[in-house]
Image 1 (cartoon, helix red, strand yellow):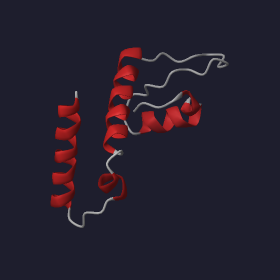
Image 2 (image 1 turned 60 degrees about the vertical axis):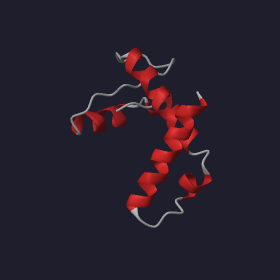
Image 3 (image 1 turned 135 degrees about the horizontal axis):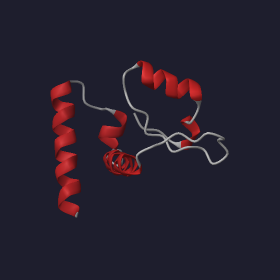
Image 4 (image 1 turned 135 degrees about the vertical axis):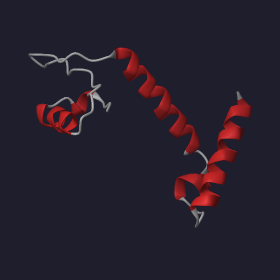
Length: 87
């Protein structure tokens, strides 16, 4: 699991370890014993968040107008195609 520096606390890290996941959280600058983290995985997190931000620009997706999962997934697919074609 990855998160911002705000989530760099021992309770959060222990909860992530209890789930069996690896924490990818950059250490807070004032932390006395900074934990190791993978900067490459953290950069990939930004790309994913940026993609969701682009999808949220479509009002129908952000407000979930569609009633069924099938029509919602179709809307997501269409929005992804539109985003891809803009590049």
